[in-house]
Length: 75
Image 1 (spheres, helix red, strand yellow):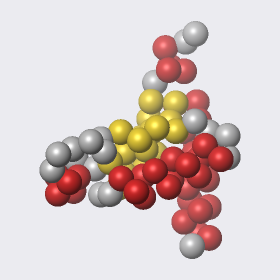
Image 2 (cartoon, rainbow, N blue to C red):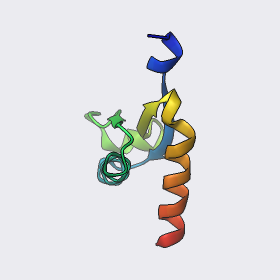
Image 3 (cartoon, rainbow, N blue to C red):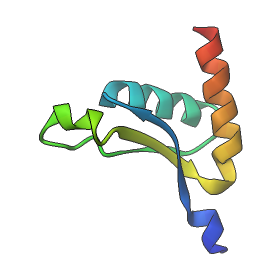
Image 4 (cartoon, rainbow, N blue to C red):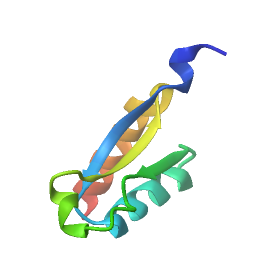
C-alpha cells in the first residue's frame, strides 16, 4: 500500500465535538470513512484554539469536501 493512501487530511474543523461527529457521520453514510480528532480535551474552551477536526484519507479528500459543501448549501 502506498504511504500517500494512508495519509489523513483535515476536511473540517469545529469548536464542538457534536458538530464534528455529525459531519463525520454524514461522510460515513455517503461511503467516505471519516474520523474525529481532538475531542478529548479536558478543557473544552481550548477547542477554540485547538479545534475538533474531521479527517479522511487523502484519496477521499476532494469527495469529502464536495459532500460537506453540498450539505452546507442544503441547510
